[in-house]
Length: 357
Image (cartoon, rainbow, N blue to C red; front, top):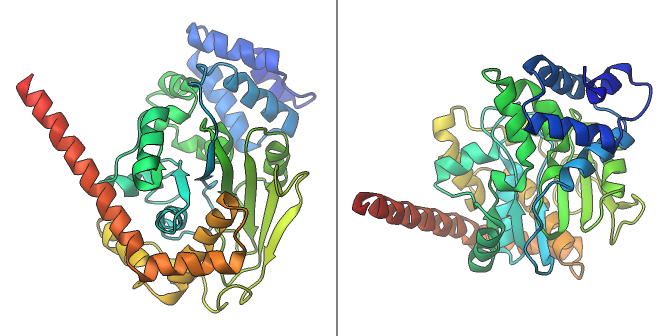
């Protein structure tokens, strides 16, 4: 049995970077059997290890990435990604990303297919006709053209794909709790800020430790008393900051019901569409501000967090007003339409090349 798996099972000491390096080496060489890989994923899912083990795991993956292309950090660009889990709602963070981008903040959204719900951000984007980017260069170009980009799987370590191949035909969905919790720390993009919603399904204290030991970007972890991984206008929300404007894990902001927006409403106002086929129509109505006032306020509050995180000059009240204007003006829906049209053009061009070939 590999030392990494033994260490996780015994829980007597942190699993260090050397053990993780050996694990990834043997995984790449095909020396780990399926039972060991399933066992390790099951251990990580049933009980997320303490900080030192997770930090070593993340660092062992980071050092295997190909050198990033030369260039500066994407200043003012915010990555929004949640841990998933918690009460079921429509795709609030995806909607907030569109609204914040329509309000003028550059936003990268990373995410996945559904693990705990019926429709993850990637599933929804497919139905909207919005393409995922396939490289850092394409992501940067898309940001320049539209102010928003939805990054594809290239941002995640290739070792995750190898794990999935080894455990097949068992799907990775049973291990979604672990993958969702660590996902926000696995994406490799040169953003200057990150806003991550943390649900009760993820260990907030452990993620705060990881955020505090992460360099290169400012990280906000947001949580509330409903257990959702979003900022909600009718809940008591806490924003924990790490890095610039929040060094040492300080509370950046506590937001109480009625403080920035009216505080009436409840989770029932944020229900997802009843059927997956209705998701696109419902999502567009949210961005248009016609899905109910509570839904509009919720998306605008989430977008305001991205505005403030990306532009340190903005205060929360003006950020909420800016986001609300992006919804009321139709700019958020128009942005979806522009990205969907670009996706159709790209697919048509590829189809033409295939036909000529």
